Amino acid sequence: MSYQRRRGGRDRGQVALEYLGFLPILLLVALAAVQLGVIAYAAQQAGTAARAGARSASLREDYAGDCQRAVSSWLAASCSSAYLGDEVRVTSTVTIPSVIPGIGNFGQAHKTATMPVDH
Image (cartoon, rainbow, N blue to C red):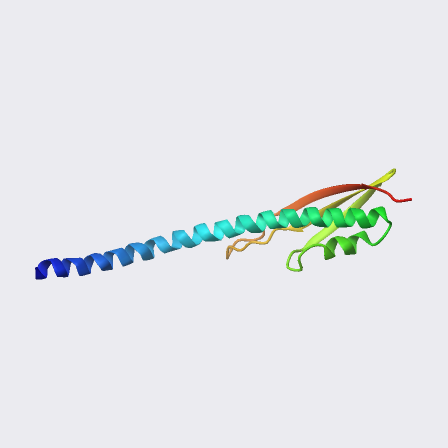
């Protein structure tokens, strides 16, 4: 009986070591899931910025300022516009930040919105 008790104690130590070995993989999967969320959020924010900028540009207002204000403060955004006759096209660019340490940005999200110019 004492042999079984000793053996059970060693098994608990083995499980703890296996868990510690698996923990980095769990953390990596969690960071990857968060990073996918940040990528989707940056793309959504780029669309919001493009629509806000196009709305302002169609009224001949400060489209660049409205474009940047439409994006969360922790994201870097820029906008450009092109007047095409009776409509304006605004393209926004949002840099996708990385949540994984040691890895740079994940590129940029580009979205375009077109609206008629208000005369």
